Length: 479
Image (cartoon, rainbow, N blue to C red):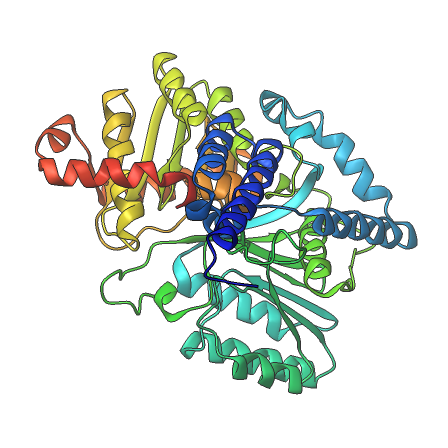
């Protein structure tokens, strides 16, 4: 074939345009929002030679294998429940439906595919030392199974301490399973995992590149942070494994984050979420442990696992339901404030209803483009009547929602499009006045160390900075 012939270039351009049409049709059928579908379909149709590769990296999605993993994990969980004393687990689900506070969140029973369960024990873990002291102490006492999942694991002082502990427990005969995100932990050397494997620890990376359409995909990530020890004690929240989460990063220190320690029947749901992700990565299921009995009293909890494999946008719908249900207050802390139109409208409506709406965001950037986009949304929120605060001492990374007097949520989900539609996330919803009081006290301490954003801040922003913010907002759907 004459590669210099004009016919060859004509055929090549024709092939690229044909592929562009196919990709445009794929976008129309798979992208969830009309704006996103148009944003991809139009360039793919008219200039495919510029947009085909970006679409393969950032746009294409197919998670049929993950959905199969979910079904398999559910089946395994049901078998485990049938082999154990599963009646308390079901009875607590029925009890949960009778809570008046939970009834206020009317969509939650159907939105969350995992049930709301009573009789759980929860403990607030504020900042890295409290979090990792508790996690390491729980793993130290493990007898049977340890499940560990983080978005980021670094091969630094904290990462090596975790590695040493897991190797020691594996040598004692404990089954240890470690899952990390391939993109989030891209800097993790292969030697770190190899040492764990040689010591009997099962460790794998979670990647969303299974399947032909996902082969080049790096945009979807598993952002969950889950630790479950012997089915008795669990942890979720905002921390990853890295020295910066203990305040060792000079530019971002002191690092402000929140985790929660959990005991009770809701741990079955955390194990189920881990099992789904593990099956996706390995095509095997880890052991799932359900105790025979549960305590007689405790906190009402629901684990909300969300991700791009869901039939609906579970994470964004949770934020919408939480904001719409508020009658007195809704306080939100998030390192990234890039709400979509629906969530932003819900915040504005809450203000108009007389609800105390506050959002706490960082004063220091860890990602400058995201920070710029967040700043523009913050200025617009202030004009709409939302009270916006910037945390002053260090970088704020916690993801917390407090609604009215007794509803709180702590987990891995940020208030941005990536958590809404691109990341696999997990959040623990709690309905309990005493625990909500603890969360309120924690957030009041944070607000006291923050500066409120005013309308003058927007007017004092330089024109070039405003231009940069608006350009950052244009690419906010993939930030």
